[in-house]
Image (tube, rainbow, N blue to C red):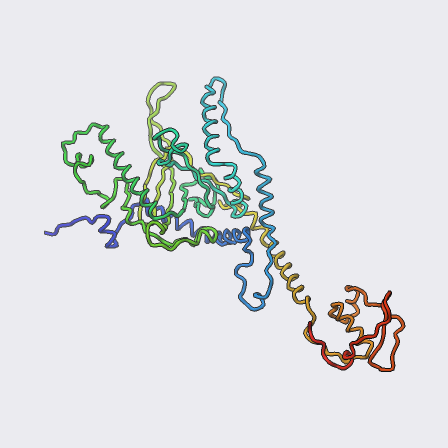
Length: 473
């Protein structure tokens, strides 16, 4: 008789047979869908965002052909993009942002509205919202999109622990537009999305610690539920739920009833090609938990459920259906937490476009429209600089076989820095000294001239007629 034994999560992972939970599969399937959509746009969304970022910070001569002529070419940068963008953002953030609540009717207690207004103002002050709005507008002008993510941090102490041991605080972070993926990318309205995916990276150490904390909290919550129900602990399986007897997990070693897998599956990766900017693609290539980083995703979905409520008209308890937001956080091989009911009815994500585009959730950036002008200005100034470099000195050698008077005229032109004997260019330079009554001597190679206000001078450049070459100074 053959005995069949179910492999634990750690053993199955070593054997390469780990079966991922459905939420884990869905999260990474949706991530691949979103990445394929961004790559299919014209222009490519990732390429466009990176190009705009580089032009905005001033790296405007990247990826030039490595030739001798290009290495000699001056590469000036007159960054009008940053000046124009700063002007737009400054005009939009000239005044501060405030939020106030008012009761719907005079019969409603106004203290609730005043309390809500004060609490929101505290949050705006804690987030430094005026500065964050400015950063968000810069993101929108450069990349076309700006996004904010609000979440609950159960470990944070409000106001730096001023109220004792209380824990839990609302947190806020700005997101890059390419790290937010909509379930319906042809619609830019947040609440109409079937799901929303947020992509990020964090150290393996932080992700493992978060996974252990959620497993501990989940087990503690399950124990409290059983204790509240006053279930007798005479049965062996019931005592195992309270931790008195070690009970094998149906999800493998280190698993939990919520489908979370062991944190040993969280490993460093180098999936950084789709993040914005050079900084997003450059990390410490460490293989330990402190320096190594892993890709993670938040999967937000809306789930219908039934709940009891008291009808104010009849006073009876009735059942109604409500839609709440559930969230899953996962790496490629591990669920940190899965299908957690946030209690919210709206997605905790704020989304905006600099300029909306029809039938897609990505916006058009201000920088995208200025880049062709910026390229032309840089090229024009580079050609001007190159022209000045070429025209700053005379040509190397000039052979003279001319008459005496022409020789003297060319010597004067050389001394004044004139590079051409063309008559059409003579008016661009200072006028030549006016020859008055040239007096020829008995020797044919000499002549004399006088400039206004000077005495008669006799030239000493006798070699000018000899057919020699004039060396370059």
